[in-house]
Length: 135
Image (cartoon, rainbow, N blue to C red; front, side, top):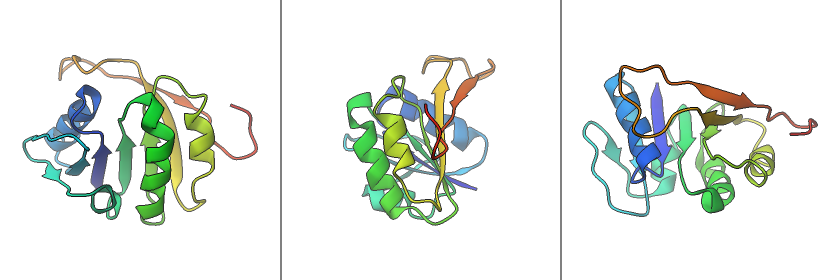
């Protein structure tokens, strides 16, 4: 399974990159800011980062999340999953609902921060994201 992390230079993005890399997933990452994370492919563009991924995790600031969701979905392969981890869902959830039908949408809220120890349990709260349902 290949995972793409968008927003890899941020604390949560770097955490997810490290998590998936440690668990032997192929990880491609992109950010508009420079970054370097061991065992993670530093993609030169968002399109290159997400195009072959089975799972795309969007870890960008809340104000940018809706537009990044749209950009990711445009370049993702059919059948891939698109997850976002923003703390505020009022603009994010509608953006996810507008993405292509052949992309699985995952709206989650990590119940931990980037300082979480590797061995500690990390939980996420899922949010409904199906068309035709109120958030």
